[in-house]
Image (tube, rainbow over all chains, first blue to last red):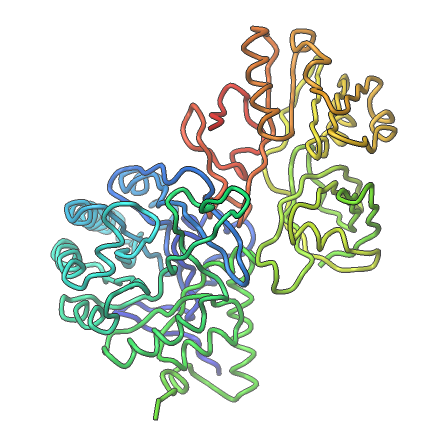
Length: 314
Length: 230
């Protein structure tokens, strides 16, 4: 009997396929196309303490094997999310992860506190959960102030992770930036500060130029690159971090096929997050679950534990 | 997976693609089309030109790699299409003006078929196309080549006006609405880059007087006075 399940920070996932933040809305958007309860889990659109309009100008552009986005964390704010979406989240039977972003340390701290208090009261009143985990976004490359600096400098990141850790007992995933000055050091810091898991990588800061207008396509100059183009880089970084810490890892970056999922598991990921592929095929979730199952059957692999982290370097 | 029935080249940059599909849709809605494997990465949002019980026709302009691939399709080729997406045009009664500029004429063939009393205005910068087809679905088709189609009508002669076309034209629609101080309700159908089509990615979110709106799921049709063109 093939077993796709995995456990991350005490949370049980049916399978390792988790939809990545910013590509899956709050879940509802895809629920008309397939039963999203089939997924291992999903991460909601990145939330900030206050509503955020996001960036002006071009927000998305395609490039070879990838796409670039500069959405700028447009979101309704934590309060609106908690009051408008949580009841729906509570009705779901999959792992539900809030992605928490921010511009200042105080934003992160207060945001975490609100989520914690809300979830505590929901559980007390109804006996059921609506949020299973928090993913801390310290690495959004598309907001002018705050976020990105936290993701690059280990010391700056330490303050955020510590502040949020002190405000919530929900399992805490820290999402790492590929732009971190020292990725392994960043991962080790997260482990020391009490993170329960890591997710990586966020999009890679990149550029596209409109040669006719002779200026960058994006208003802020740079934008985040995702999609198959970044997969080899992401895979290397997941492998690197998996060898630096004992924390569970959700690997992501350009995963499009079942074979991509297997590569990330072999590199050391406990589960994967899938983002841009949702745009290529909106039924990517169930297709990947089916594809990974078929690969395991074909290879005689009963559990992903048999292949997890098997890639060692000489 | 769907099969191409035909792909008529109306000129060197405009094609009319007919695809087997029984999912239908309402005028003003769109589908996400993909007729390639790994490159380009994303499907393309294309509005419905016409629908039957068994097929959908899409009118498209070649602007980049995706639409260039669509242009190359032949009868019997396969493509994937998801949809219909978007809210489409509102239910309207009374006298309606449908104003299309360039490839913005695309949604108005099906719309003219569905509205009881719609006049069609088609603006082209160059050689017109599909004019005879439009005459089959509307008793009043006005064509303008090289000029401004908006100069050929007064909004105040209509109960409702719907426009689709380049941003410059839609800005002019707003200006005309204000200048005429018309009581007609005026709508615009927007075009925007999209990744998902289902309201998840926010790539197509733009400013409106009532806050940000997603072109895909809040639109693509909006009251003209609500749109904030930059």
